[in-house]
Length: 190
Image (cartoon, rainbow, N blue to C red; front, side, top):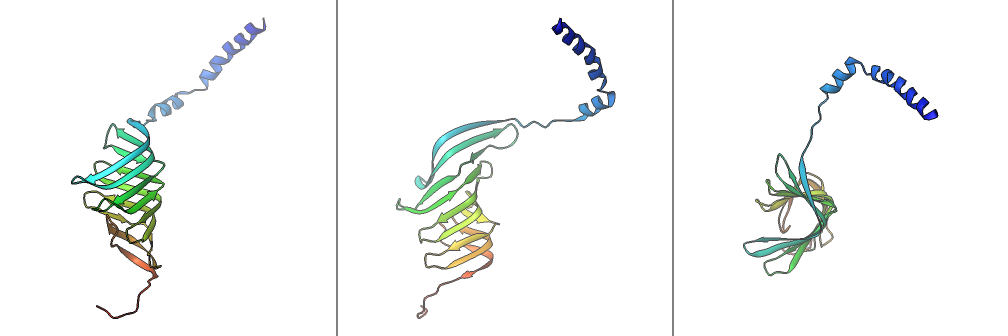
């Protein structure tokens, strides 16, 4: 008997609930549009990455997680959500630099890789470059950033600036609005 009383109460309350949805509410609900992005995401754990050019290994990297994302519209990209650690190789095949960061994304169509969050690069001369963002342009073969980049030289020099640009091997670099301390040796100019 108690169950039938509950069902009878619900049956009586149903028209009140439906009556609370007026015509205006339904018109507003139908005007809401939902944008759907359709993509496929393939995750790989423990990825070894090798970059070569003209049959010579230029870099080897490791990413703990790499997602290959293919949107329904637009170009695909690889996202390394747990960062990447890359060793750079000289023509003799020995490591002469390193890059580590907490996040990276490579955009296939643009041939660019964005390294973000705690980016640190060490070159063959022992200089260390750090920033929150460095972008590698694969086709032009250089790194750049509009973010502030800090440089610590192997000789103890320190500097910082914006609009950073360097070749792939970080052998030289340019930046604007720079400041820092430079250590110079005394001696006769050549």
